[in-house]
Length: 482
Image 1: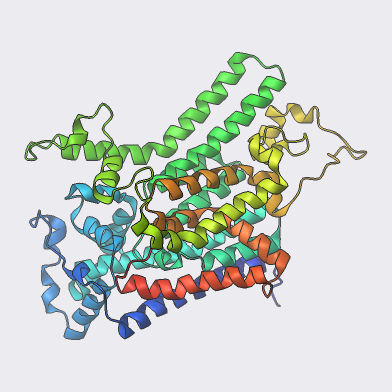
Image 2: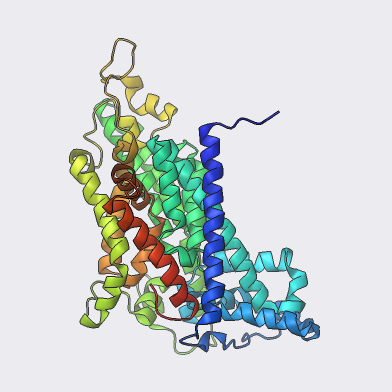
């Protein structure tokens, strides 16, 4: 008897299929470009031993020299594919945080690489070598994470915007996004996207404490994970606003604000814990003299110091004529982000500029992403909403990209775009903004309204696919690329 799948189930399988095929494409391009082109810089292959060579982790690999010649060559080939930030992640997974600048890379990905290598791939260590096995673990983690991230982006879009075609198209765009190269490399984008999208699915479904777990883990992968605290603050703002409208007492309002504050701290806790670890490691180590300048600051902030001192990150510090090529490199993703904001604001200006507080009674719950229980509690069981003959709100909330539920995401995207343009290395904007669902929602909206063969559709897909193909060539051969 044939199994009949619903449209949603068929779309879910389609998303998983597209995601897997996109990873096969990128990894194949890595292999092809590495074979056809010569690396611009081979310094990534210079792997120095750990400072603490007597550690138990290091001594476990002493039998590696007995491996067959071709297997060792395979191990060296895998090591050579680790470039740019991947070098730091492999080194941290192998040796821990030995140098100050390594603290720019948060610990969850290298920790998982170490766990996977020791638990699931221990027999490969004597054959391929430790670094190659760690790199292989990183590839495995990130490519699996990417496939799952695409699935959860589809679920998030479908649940929040209630548009099957938009959800499927947005997930397809994510699978071939301009930063796609990094999602298959030993970088943190895939793991961060998975934790972020999974946390958002939990959040919009009302599972707030589950979302805190995923958001908190994301802040242990990338520093922008702490931005997820904004969803709890945004929702608390709406709760307080509606409680005020219902003439509730201060004793009922204050706990709402306190819970939101605690939820936000919980989201940022892994990132803050890592800063504390770095402080005690670098500022209380008697073998390090003199102490680093940031140690004596009133509020020691290791991550900020490392980004500023080693990578020259800061407000307008990248606004130099020589950086014009990097602005051009980041322009497709920046333009899509700005277009996403402008397109939404032009259609929903009142919602956006009032942070959704001016929403009509029928859309208030949707804007704040309230669960059913929260809607009953903070909207006074529907008091004030305009009712139709059947007892339902007669004003039907828009679905799709212009849904009131997208307000908070567009506000977050606005902040991220400003940071990418004025504070960060601008070329990193391609990766930084690639984890925002809003850019894929807008891209999908434009595609569905103009058609794949229309000018807008051709522009979006051609730019995305060009970055996938050219980006993989530049990245794997150690040429500058975002």
